[in-house]
Length: 157
Image 1: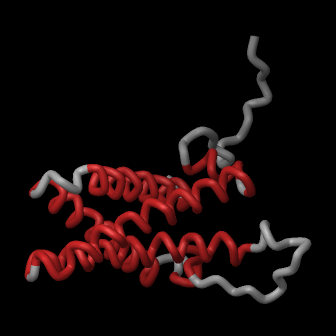
Image 2: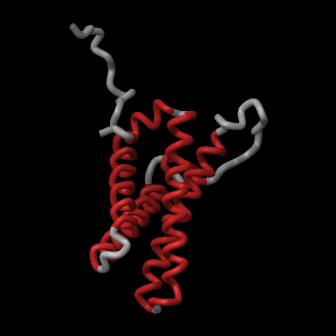
Image 3: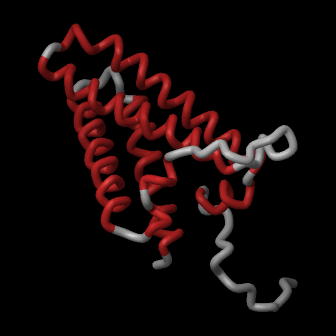
């Protein structure tokens, strides 16, 4: 399995678990366990970034705005990285505030719910950006295409 396929699989698992955690917010233990799952997935990703290839490093989350202009404003890599950073930070904050609720239920609940809503908005902005600006990558991440597969040269019909 290629590195990009591993990233795509990680991405799909994280997306499904985060969405299920968000949708089960009123279901107590199910929501809690899904939240723990998000935490494990995030820790795994951080460890993967530290101990694996450079292209998986934490620099993927750090936008550098050097060279951005009106001409390349939408396609500059900093925009994509800023959206990824927003998803990462809000997901981590939602997970941490969820864990803090276990100790003091009322003090952190509103913040947890607010940050969890921000996760969904950040994910939506990230997805919309990819569909509008980087559609081949969006299609790959959604299992709609596989640019790593070579075409056989045969035509259908």
